[in-house]
Image (cartoon, rainbow, N blue to C red; front, side, top):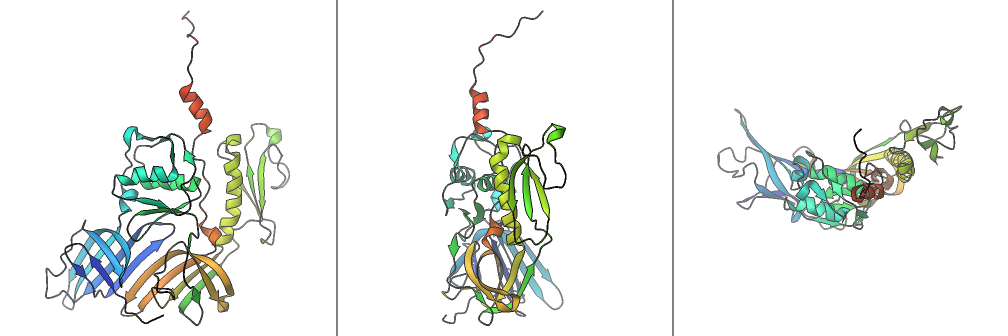
Length: 375
């Protein structure tokens, strides 16, 4: 890769500033919104008005020539002492409004929409667009908005139901995608671009079998014997993890009895896969903000991982989070959190309090019987 000198610049429409002494910009596949924290020291000591930026300003953050975050300035802290003058600016992407603010829609209900359409409806009020990398998701029936809920809480819940992740892109807009939706041009490799790496492997949060059950009112239908001996009337699904070396059962309850059978089965499978993925996490510091093709590291992108000293070789894992940093002490680095794709699969959820067809029938039912006369 040709040598390039990257620096962070922040543009507000009024001016563009660079030359920051310390910077951090963080994006993630399970993180909303992206955020930044930049510091300048001494540079503006003789120029009290040199940083003409105010809280609430629209801003664009670029690394080199590439846009990495579009959002708003949240806070500015200026300090002076006998030895230095410091200006610190912090902010988040445009999607912060989806996280901070209340959701408001006509009638507080969204009728017959896909997850993408629902997200677009809620985000449009904040000037945010939404795109889907992995399909729009299935059709939702009438969806009621609870007072005080945020747009993000609603979108994230519906996205999990559609098996989609929710995060923002460099333009500050919302993305719906399955885990591992894109790929990097190269990966992280010991002896090539890795400055430091920490791998953590665990077994304490894993189970040999996950049992999805319903709670019966019949005492004779309860669990009998050991934890795996469950009456067929109670057991919905048994998902095994044969890589767990000893007997370790885990039980999850179906949230809605027989109406939640499908979700309970999916959740049992998800529990095994997710726990497997999260049991092997790597935090790696690389010597550049970019891959070998010159592309900035991206969350939710697949990349090859080669760390033989940590017993990790020829793995195609997913970037869960990336922090771009620069300081006088450490230089220009990127900190990546990478894990198997299964670690980022969204948790299945039961979207409706009971089956939507039942709900629809109740709403549209016309009762013709007259009430009995009072005695």
